[in-house]
Image (cartoon, rainbow, N blue to C red; front, side):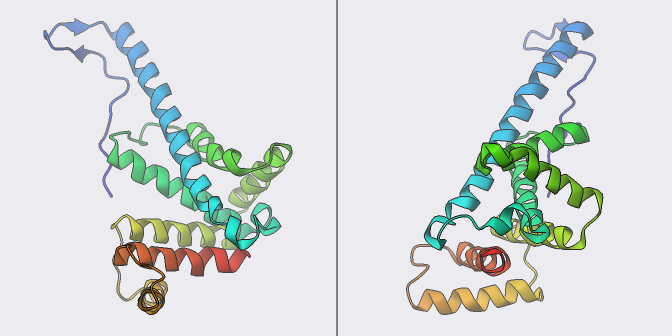
Length: 203
């Protein structure tokens, strides 16, 4: 997946009449662009996680496991991170020049959108502890979410992947019963992947 490279700190900027904007002004323009770009990516992260959590409604609400289990937290973080990468690639909003602090703020915005305010600090600290300790279950959840979203977006098509093969078989079976009526096959398989690798694990 390729993201266009955006140079935020170019020394000069060519405008329509081909005059050159001084470097000091370009720095200000670059910083302003970076601010708005980060804000857009924070919204994208929040929208992605909110979409994921919305489906907990029919399942009886968000289970407590989501706020503490390393696999569940890895999934949510991986889902937000991959959604942001896909959004950035589609909207010419490169992540390449954002430091780790900015990236962390973007992903945190996803969690903050769905976490009760009185638990936000607790949840973010727990998530960070899983990252720092290289928790294998956290990483497994992260990679499972990444696989699911990349498949849904058309960036991953491995017929030999056991999860995708199983989800495809399941989606085809459920489609025969009319469950996925109106959805493309890829969306149906992505739905089955999400159910199998996330909802059924954490509920």
